[in-house]
Image (tube, rainbow over all chains, first blue to last red; front, side, top):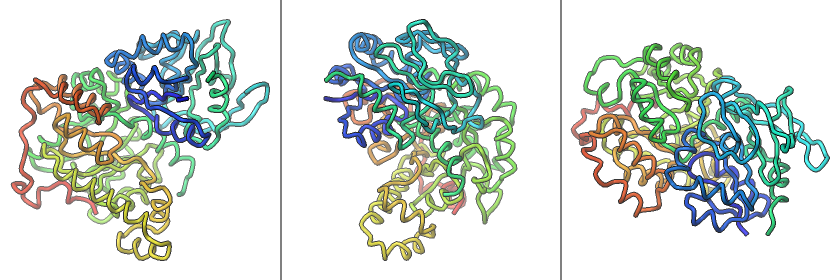
Amino acid sequence: MYIGILALQGDFAKHQEMLAMLGQDTMLVRTRQELELCAGLIIPGGESTTLSLLLNKHTLRDAIIRFAGEKPVFGTCAGSILLSRSVVKDPVESLGLIDAVIERNAYGRQIDSFIDDIDVRLNGNVQKVEGFFIRAPKIISIGKGVVPLAWHQGNIVMAEQNNILIATFHPELTKNPAVHNYFLKKIKP
Amino acid sequence: MKDANDIKLKIGLAEMLKGGVIMDVTTPEQAKIAQDAGAVAVMALERIPADIRAHGGVARMSDPTVIKAIQKVVSIPVMAKCRIGHFAEAQVLQALGIDFIDESEVLTPADEEFHVDKWKFKVPFVCGCRDLGEALRRIAEGAAMIRTKGEAGSGNIVEAVRHMRKVQSGIKKITVLGDEELVTEAKNLGAPVELVREVKKLGKLPVPNFSAGGVATPADASLMMQLGAETVFVGSGIFKSSDPALRAKAIVDATTHYMDFDLIARVSEGLGEAMPGLEIAAIPEAERMANRGW
């Protein structure tokens, strides 16, 4: 069983390293054919403007929307922007798979990027995760069906709606597999 | 490494740019073309390297007016160049909110002995190199990304290939050395032994390794990716060609799908004229940009 990692651009190799550490087979996804072989998909961090453009160019947009109808999808940072229903400030065409409104580059430019510990609630247990916020977005609001899972200074930074999971930070840049483990539990072999 | 959190954050941004193309632009219009073509970042310049070469004289940091105009029209990261060793230009670029500073040999060096102490900055730096020793010296100074120097503005890929191969063969050599050989290897490379040990442990550089200098075609981009580059900078190659938007898109495709040769063949069709190139031997030694820095 493969977990796909969208590899059009971004830190896909970091997600791959994390899943390898967990003993999970991965497939770098650049085409629809590769996507079809996967049991779940991760959309990595990167540049959401670029990723959105490349999704259209490689006719992956509809394929991912269909894929998400039955299988889990996890997006970090740029991935969380692409999965959201609506994007404000420098809008990009998103996939609209989770009922959330998200603001791009909400903390500012790279000099405003930061690392801070955040409390993540996974399966009822709260644990500390090192949060990398790199030109990060902010989740402005969520719909009724969306469950918040982590906060930073009052802002929701991680949330899920059924099989869709988003984080505005980068658990793949840490050595802590808690968030990836949580995502893997959503996947049915 | 010192300032562990800071450097992790800086390298983090470099990770986000992987698998993409970073394009040199001189106007907001060019920046839009680059972003719409799929660039992951733009390098805001007053003149592209081919024109700097043709123009001669002292090349300096860009006018902030140019940088701010470009920052206004794109949502992708904006990079800019400072002269080697010119930490005040770097301080100004940081104040302007630049996302990545390139301490670049394309500009006229301001200091012939010392590069910028990049640890002092919150903004990440990329630096050029010709071999592993030079790469590790720049990382020791706090660079969060390394790129080959190539020969900027030449439209000739030969120097970028030489530099990438030298870095890669230097890394391969270290991975097979015994621990007792590492201090001598560090001395030969002119690099700190801690970084040499780290390269042995990782089997690669501790920061992302990009390619720059001389990329003019989709196949050039694929070549550099196959040689181990993680992202490609394109300077003069796009806006010195006859159809910049089309060529920019083709180079983005060839970088994403660098092993899909049917696709690269397809996107290479009908691109019009590539930039006119220069034979490296025809560039006088004193005018070669790659020789700046140490």
